[in-house]
Amino acid sequence: MSKALIMAGGKGTRLMPFTASFPKPLVPLGDLPVLELLLRQLKRSGVEEVLLSVNHLHHLIRAFCGDGSSFGLKIDYVLEDEPLGTAGALAYALDKLSDDFIVANGDLLTSFDIARMVEEHRKQPAAASIAVFERSVKIDFGLVEVDASMRLTGYREKPTYSHLVSMGLYVINRSSVAPYLVPGKFLDMPQLMQTLIAAGKSVVCRSQDCLWLDIGRPEDYATAQELFEQKRELFLPGQK
Image (cartoon, rainbow, N blue to C red; front, side, top):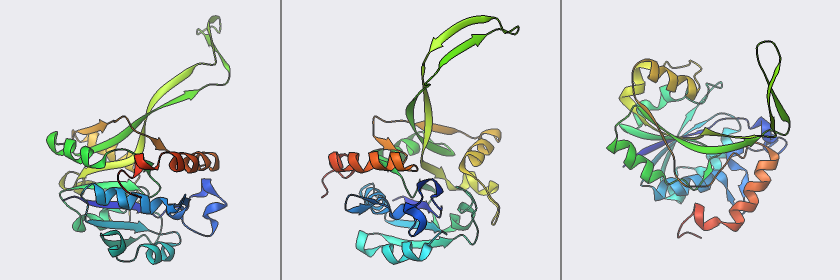
């Protein structure tokens, strides 16, 4: 059984004004807050205990989630008195987590198979596993290529580039990260991952054929609403 830590303390400033009166993890997708969708997915993946790292409007998240019994989970909370970054709360949560545990952003919207990721992480031991998604970015301009003397060497009309991006979903080995966590110190997840690499530890990126949306911007949130309504079964297989 894996345990999970959900990062639910952000202010969601890119999603204003939706997040002015309630926290980003509670923004609705159809009839479900995105946080409830994530909790259901974690339950289906074999998770029984969840820690919620909270800060902004945390009383609303506590009121909604309670002790987790309504979701078939045991839920506890880590309160950040001040923002500590996407990995800072780990320092306060480690003693409540399993040897290998899941970390997820509280606004994660994906059909990624979390149970499969955990299984792959255990078969190929690593300090951390990162769920990644291939995202294409189209440049809306013609790109001019020049040499050191500014002579034209080429021209590319509105090219499209593909990149792997982090989805905000991780499986982490507790003993591997423990030496690098300091209570009260601001730490983002990319910093922690690069620290592990610098220390010679293995960090593996894992991809699947899945759906993933960053709901941080209003236009992406609108797309997510439509996608969830159309393809709910992909996010909650066998559930209503």
